[in-house]
Amino acid sequence: MKIFFPSEIKEYENKTEAVNRMIEDINAGIASTDKLVFSHLNIDGIDVYENHYQYLLKELSEINEIKIIMKTKQEVTIELQQSLNEYLERALPVMSKLSDQFYQGESNKVWESFVEFTDGLQWINSAVETLSLHSKENAQSYYKNVSAKIESALIELVEALEIKDTITIADMIQYEIIETLTDLKQSVHH
Image (cartoon, rainbow, N blue to C red; front, side, top):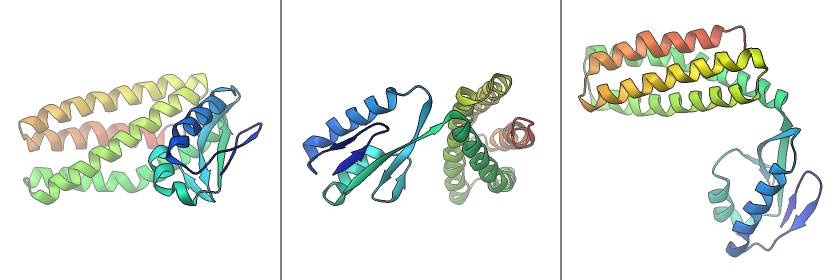
């Protein structure tokens, strides 16, 4: 298989032993450029944004080409802001419903929705942390503040979860998380 690095093309055998070396070479290739940021891998025309190692192992025998997709910090920031806004547009109404469900009492469905909610909140926080790294200086402190609020809310949610305090969970979602994320969505930095 061929791997297209920003400045060269390397060939590797489609063998499990080669995967660790490929990952090391990919990471070294990414680290060698300071003007661009790693976005994702394009593997035989399929964009792979996460779990690269697992994907490579799973599809190893079929892979022909891997392209390392690098972007400017500005491109990454713009795309991430768009993704975050689209996600928040869908997620905020669902969060409000989840809060209402917790006020009404717990059920298996509510707890399943809560797991999805926490996964989504972690993605949001990861996106905000990335934005704080790649945004202009005036926006960095804003994103760091939002991330700190999300992390604080997650800690309080865990405490409420440990004692199954559904009212506190509902309050946290409604009055801290939704308010923070609504502010994020409406922020001038978006």
